[in-house]
Length: 306
Image (tube, rainbow, N blue to C red):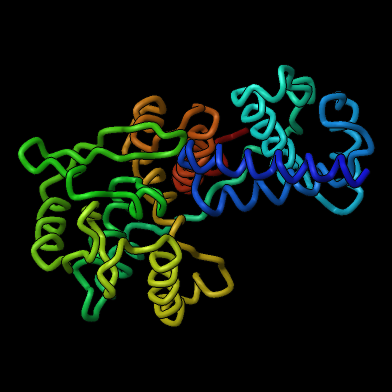
């Protein structure tokens, strides 16, 4: 068994290197490594002889420990990605996890988002020494749909002023192009004019920390949490709710649905690999339709001889 675990450690190191090369975020790397390490620790046979039933047994064990459908699917996704890496690196030839089905997760839950009024108040409440930088970051999330990790990776060269577009390097190492409204460009231009010069001569990040380095994902989240905390003090409907920077991206998607943007276009704007991921936002539109019909019902004459 000891020798078997030594091989497992080697596989994990290779998997970690592969994810870094593929451009996975640090958070995803840590999550996938943790899941796969847990999976490997339960094995009583060589990795080369693992079958789908062994993976199913592991997932069943996770369920017995309290994992729900979403958590089970994440374990499976981690294992599938691990096998993909091993196959690409020519250490394995077969991916047994492909024979294990994902659990069906409830799709009808509507993502939390800010309405237009609260979003405006949130953006206008941002103050301080780095006000323009922070407003620019949150504008790109709430009105252009960028992820926190995409803000972190954004470089000056990705912003094309003459063409009014932003080139975004997203998940899966895929690029997408976002046309920018003039209002966002004006803020981005001002943010660039006030931008701190970086200490590095090899890269030119768009958003820079006070220390002259590329602003980190965690710092962006911390800044958002601080301002959301202030917003909650003034709006009782937000108290008790978990609001993170990612809710700004949900807000962008929701506004697009309510404005009538078709699902395929929204998928492109959000950079979703699968349209199923985008379809969750269509339920927001369904809710608005129901509310509209409920309002109409108040005008229907009562007692029409029926």
